[in-house]
Length: 220
Image (cartoon, rainbow, N blue to C red; front, side, top):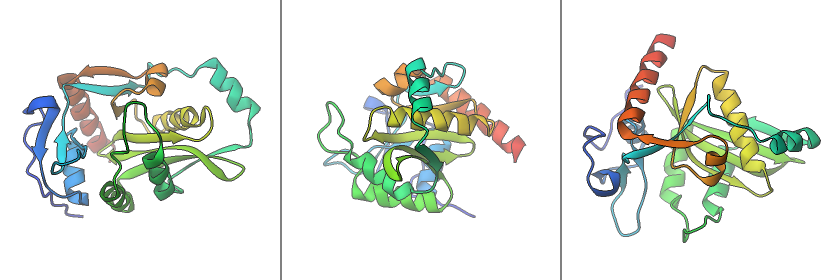
């Protein structure tokens, strides 16, 4: 499948203020693919055209650093009715992520145009969702992008305690079984930080990205 980008992205090191790399363009499949393959992600800001970012500090979760709290292990064992699935309800997960209250934020950056764009990206095979259900009711989840062997987490939500942590735990196990050893989390939230997430310099991130791309090509 030939993909075309609406933005000619520069080197991800050549950013402007606040990590902004490019302005404008469309949120179509080709543009999103081109962006994520270079470690760039969109982040809409009110009153501006679409902004594309490559921040100086990047959040990652190295699986060697991943930590599952003992309390979470006990919780999982005591709640066998909780079911975890993958890619069963991407639309529902992104919708719930857009509604999740976040400290220090008014509203959400997951606007209708973002939902439509990532749903199309999912249909094209470049996204992944994790769903956590209790008694067949969605109580937590994560969605993100999977491009050229690299998973980039976009957002998570929970409606009951521990649900997003269970989703992250399941995601790490799922990707680890497929040969991944780290994920891009963009920004380290308290949940991700408590389970091993950290910030690294952009140059280190881009080196990891390029190395993973090389591995991906060899595995294909």
